[in-house]
Image 1 (cartoon, helix red, strand yellow):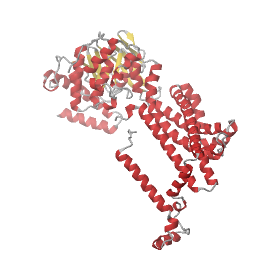
Image 2 (spheres, rainbow over the protein chains, first blue to last red):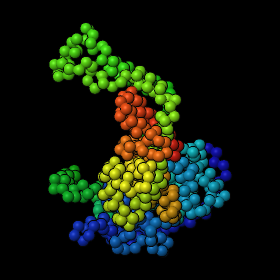
Image 3 (spheres, helix red, strand yellow):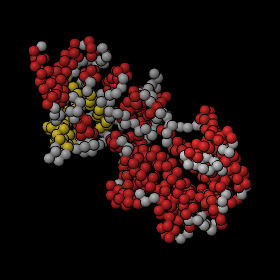
Image 4 (tube, rainbow over the protein chains, first blue to last red):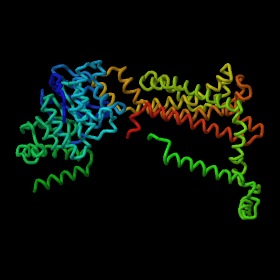
Length: 290
Length: 289
């Protein structure tokens, strides 16, 4: 691929600290605790992956980090400053595409700069660079509905990167893509990361995805969400897709992560159902025997 | 709404269906003639057995045949009065419709984006909305100084409610992710309104307008009939197509009634088609699925 001129903005990697954060919904009669006393750090210039059972409140945490919602207690700071509402230094990629359907790929990518009145020559050059970087140069005039799932995700990555955020937050971005495309996106995304070393926070439910991408792996508990364990994924970069199957260290981390996740998934599975709780009990007796 | 092109198979199907329709109509209305024939004695007997004693088929037999209608049409086609009726109805529809767009779209958007405005405006709107536009005819004749204005007002009401409801619904159904994405890229409220809410509502505006346009035609014709079409502008022919039909009925020219009806059909079709084309043009991202 001819990538033309390399345009690189100055990367300022940010750091987010979450301290004793609570988040509940409803009033005190019907209070639903989603996040409780949750503390962790998204380290500067690292790719932190958060994994947890589905329904554990990961998306709630993301809304808190993005500033769309405020924590009920505790503080979240970015580079020392408390987060107060959404801001361009933290960009979120959502589970489903949030490309604006009424804009072409090119206009979507230029949305941020245009909104802030920063449509300079450098920005336009950067847009060109990013377009070729994500392989969508020929698709610049297409609307999102005309792009495939993988292309949409890449367009969205470009739309986020042009704003040069200090931290990128990705909420299960590759969910729903087919297995092949997903693996290509992993390779693609980790190459992008290795090139820029921005602070990235990536949420997923897929253990292979987590291990392939992560520098640090946060394993979350069942609801109300807390960090159960932090694993350093010290597999050298650039990684290969075969690493997640063949690399011993990767397998070791995977087993460790899975056993914690399994416990939490069981809790989440049995929550609120007597029958399911009985099943889990019987299941754990059986596996203890085995 | 997929992009439609008039041509090829679609055109031929349309032509074929209209032809078949006309042929059946011709045969049906000629039943005055052929039902007397020996061959169809059985059919006659069957009709008598269900209590139909007239010399033609029920309903369709009483309608003038297409050939007769065509002849009647030929007579009025070079009549200035007939075309003036077209002109008057189109003018009223256009006036009412444009007024409904100009007032309805901003009003709907205001209710959709502003909580206070919604709280104040929506209850009143919801109470007035179920009142059929035609129920406004007597009141508007009293309220408005001229006949013309009262017809235009009723026409306006026909499209107004549909447009407003569609705009509110459309703006409200815009996915929150778009707002969140825009916000986190540093959009101001004005920018979000201009580049997210407006284009996001546009498809609903198009749909609302198309439906509203249909209602406008229904309303204008009825309003013209009720108000007697007595516009000073064109004398007896200033009443528009609705009055043209009414006049033909009073004058006993049944062929002309049908001419008037089909004229309205054609006028409605043309305006819908125009709106659709315009709609496709302003929402290019929708036809490319």
